[in-house]
Amino acid sequence: MRILVTGGAGFIGSHVVDACLEAGHEVVVVDSLWPHGGGRRANVNPRAELFVLDIRDAALVDVFKRFAPDAVSHHAAQHSVALSTRDPGYDADVNVRGLLNVLQLSRDHAVRKFVFASSAATYGSPRYLPIDEAHPQTPESPYGITKLAGEHYARYFAAGGGPQYTALRYGNVYGPRQDPSGEAGVIAIFANRILEGQAVRIDWDGEQQKDYVFVGDVARANLLALERGDGEAVNIGTGVGTSVNTLFRMLCDVVGRRVDVVPASKRPGDVYRCVFDIARAREVLGWSPQTALAEGLAATVNFFRTAAGR
Image 1 (tube, rainbow, N blue to C red):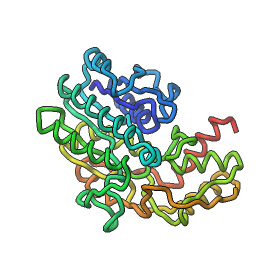
Image 2: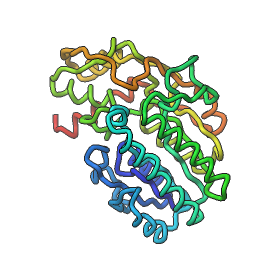
Image 3: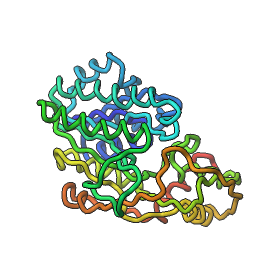
């Protein structure tokens, strides 16, 4: 299968590229390498061809004409909740207008399957836990709003002769290659700062819980979605909530060092607890997480330790 991965130089997208190549597919990557987006040339598998291109660019049509993808895995996005609250216009421009460009080209060039990277942020504050796919979607950040809009657009295009779609609603994805200098990705930020012996900032009271899922498991869900889950939106998580304070203690244990904590207030758009019901992913995709949190944290710390030559 020929697969186009937008955002394939980024954290999650690059792991999706690796999984697709390992499964024997042919892959091209479209990524703008925006400095704040986490896309890096070094993340791109040398077996995949990279087009440095913004998904909003009219020149994207040339990639579709040349490569003629069978499937598109759409991971290019403005992914920071904090940035989306500061600049909702930019967030919408990338996450909605950019998505529309990719969807329209996918329809016009007979793409069979469109896998959309959605988010737990589409749910907003939970009305019940664990969150299943029937839970009301009332996003509380511009980022979550654009991701919800993306699901609707994917369904709209599928109904109008475009590609079939599967929307994967990610929990908090972590692992090697995550950008430790950004505002998203608490595990990457904490791991890097603890390795450097620097204090970490913990917002709110630190007892807020999220569903942390390892990036390798997420990549495997994307691979399965190429052939399964048409017309479905499924949660991709672990079904287990972990607090920020617990993550901090576990990472200190992995690194073998304690650092100071700097308390901070709640960030706009943050949700206190988010834990997924993942039964639907098992039923629809045949997927379940395989990486325990302790194992994933160790792999993440080892990546940053090796990258820094520590």
